Image 1 (cartoon, rainbow, N blue to C red):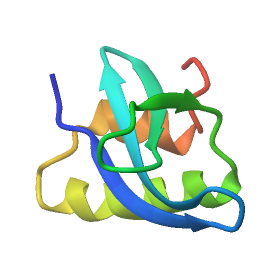
Image 2 (tube, helix red, strand yellow):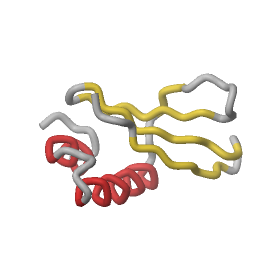
Image 3 (spheres, rainbow, N blue to C red):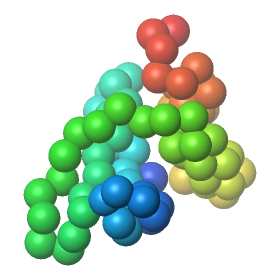
Length: 81
């Protein structure tokens, strides 16, 4: 199972969030965590989250850390291929 791609984001309502995009087979889910000891929750990403994920995944793809199949899923914004 590939490692999740993660970053931090500031939200005006929720504060600082940890964001992770996780792959399980061909399924991509987004998870966020409000604080260190808070549980992870699944959420629906906005365009900013997709753009950030695409940028981070492209960097990891060049270094061989993300597979081409996963890049296609990210570039299709999670739609079935």
